[in-house]
Amino acid sequence: MRDNPAEFFLDPRLAADCYQLGTIEGLLVLLMDNALVPWFILVPQTTITELCDLPTPVYDSLNRLTNRLSQHVRESWSVEKLNVAAIGNMVRQLHVHVVGRHERDYCWPGVVWGRTEKQAYRPEQVEQIQNALSISLGVGFTCLPLRRGLSQ
Image (cartoon, rainbow, N blue to C red; front, top):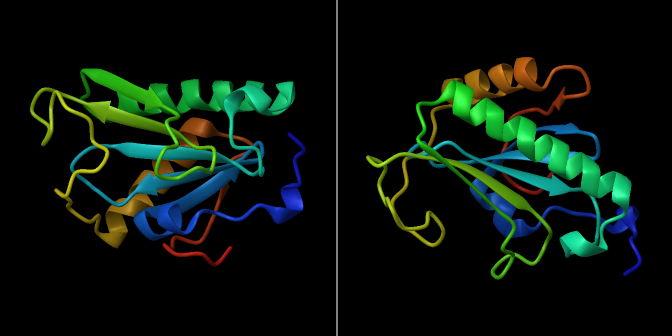
């Protein structure tokens, strides 16, 4: 698979459902707009759709940031379990979900995907999450203006 980063754009479904918090090492960091569980998504800025086709440096960055984001979720929220997945059946664009779970959440022990239960974040909550993530990820994380939608 040939990659053409110039052709990268965020899938409209991810853009509609998520806040774009920032970028780091060629990855977009998104926050699903559902305050019922801490739910982040990492999107490599590539046109490649499968993990196995990523160039080694991009794959390594994605793995490293998935681990760092997972640690952030575990340290910042009282979670009992981390769900980390790159499924891509509904949204083919390569993306990795990092979701903090606990036995009291709205769909335990089932999956969070495809559920209708939602509670939107208040703007100040998203700003606090972005600030905490910036501190946690440190140097290299660039905050984006908080918005949902396709504008980059």
